[in-house]
View 1 (cartoon, rainbow, N blue to C red):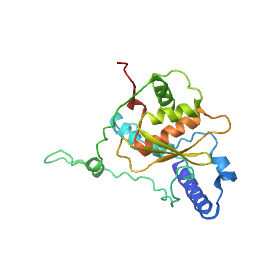
View 2 (view 1 turned 135 degrees about the horizontal axis):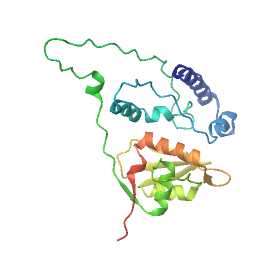
View 3 (view 1 turned 60 degrees about the vertical axis):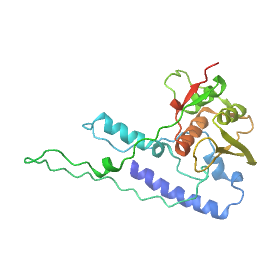
View 4 (view 1 turned 45 degrees about the vertical axis):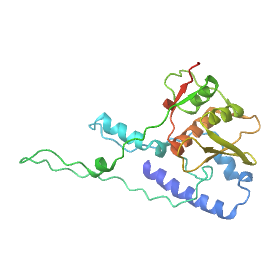
Length: 226
């Protein structure tokens, strides 16, 4: 399954390259219509042996959060087209167990180089903004499926985090984080014609915010009234 997904990525990388090279009005193409549909893609995770510890499985899941949800095309992610790496299944070598001497095993290269998770700040926002973020990101406290997000509410919530908001052209809006040390901004398309963001699209926006800024649902708390 992972090999098939890798082959699909190669095809979409070629589509991205051809589109970015030859197409000037991308929003008027069938490719844009296909990619902008509110659908959620979930990739196949790397196989983890059942005998592995839960902490190892959790580490792989956290590390590959974006990899499992990233779309096959980068045309709506404001990123340049790139050649995807060919799929190479991981070959796990057997470790010879020492019967003499110190039984302590040296740390593997992966364990030695895996960086500690960066501490993310907390955003204290009002109830209106918190409702938006609980739709963008998974929240175990929410037991019902959230509804549509009005575009103005989305702008309000993002602005509450210190983002500078600027409308560029057509339906494209740019959001630039000013309070955090962010390397780049992020673009979102204003929904038309109803002016509301569907749930699936909202979750896709949330995954993009996770990839760009490392945001997650636990970062947003209700602002205490003074």
